[in-house]
Image (tube, rainbow, N blue to C red; front, side):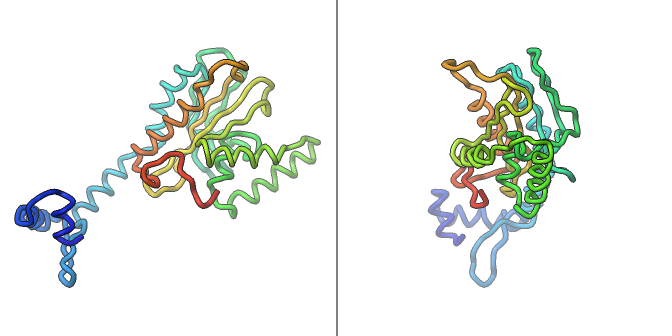
Length: 239
């Protein structure tokens, strides 16, 4: 930015803004282009930012938030990241209630039949997800199991508009999984946070999805993510 732009944005007098900038340049926080006179972030500012980001662990932040989320919803919850074979569980917290749902650390979530997997399908590059989809479809066909691809497409559309995916009844009748993406400072998918529990009785308010999306948004922001105007869910072109 030029000095006049910084002056206007900061409501400082030009002479005062210039004194601050001169000090910042000397300290390495700001640099000035000799040809244009424009100011930019300096080497020290960039180093500070990178150091701060390196100390941010999205998985740790998500796991800390997950503990409270499990208590609020009475559902089991987990955090996953992309591994060699797909979206892999790296944190798991059991439900306070007894439900038939558990995921061991290292569990790879199916891409087509879980909420976590469908978020991966929506946000990961097609060159990575396509071979996994083909394998799962082939395995389902061999086992005479139907995979509702219309439901898969609907989940991706839901992610675009409401920020989460939900899948019910695939693993166990009466159980559902809900998942929301966590983005990093680079805007890419960093982790996925999810919940597993009983279907919400018809006619009763269901706060779990909204709580989950709120947590995912908070963790993303704390991990350095800044969406389009800080809006969430992020409407990504890759969907």
